[in-house]
Length: 337
Image (cartoon, rainbow, N blue to C red; front, side):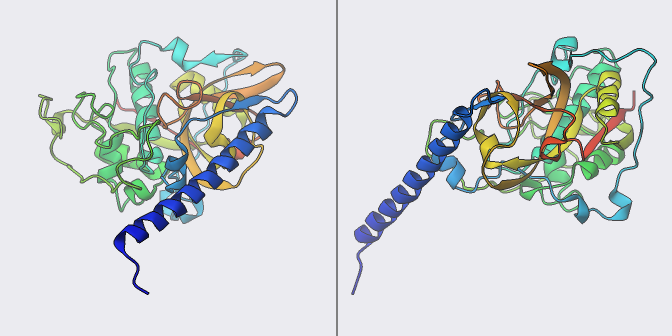
């Protein structure tokens, strides 16, 4: 029997409506489950339009560590723990609030570039801190994501923070702000997904073209070759809370790779701990500090899902229990100044 074009469209719309309704029901179930637990450490709510999450959008993007070759594994560097005790609470965003990158939240959109954005952001922070704000610029996650494709991983389809740090050490990193910022040599070229619309313009973005030798911002007057900042040492940090804290306190934010579960997508505030839902993959974020609420130790972190997610783009997660593997894969680097 011949099925007309109009009938096909109607069937498709009905099918999509069923999928959307089922997903919306699941979203509500997750939110209610989390929020109905007495004295639970965190609260859930809607951060994304439901259809954005059903499209399979790339909200994570860290490739497994066991896919690293032996030569790509970063050596461990232990920051000496000083004789004076570390503060009970520390927040880089307060101590170094004048650093542009420290207080900015990246938005990877529907591209699995968290591995590149978090590394570029942490290096920007560290460059500002190590120069006492002498170099106060936002460095380009776009440059790593597009030009380290193949060496670091597969761009919007995921990559390794370890290789991103090595890329900065060998090739340097140019400046580049968020999408539409007109800031720096290579700003991020992928538009944020609208949070109140049905979906992004594409289900998953292609990795942007690499421009290794030129700026993509025509209004930026410094040539790319004169706009590069390098690391002289890149390393991993031992998965011990006090060592991670010493590293952050001395050198600035670190990049952490954590496992993301379904409930994390709906985080709105409090100290996150896994509660419900399946795995969504591995994800790179920045650890910005630490503290304690109601007797529970936490890490303060910056995500790369835009400022409308979570606590204006930030979140807290349990510290000292390796929640979601967040203390297992910590990386950092020291700027050449």
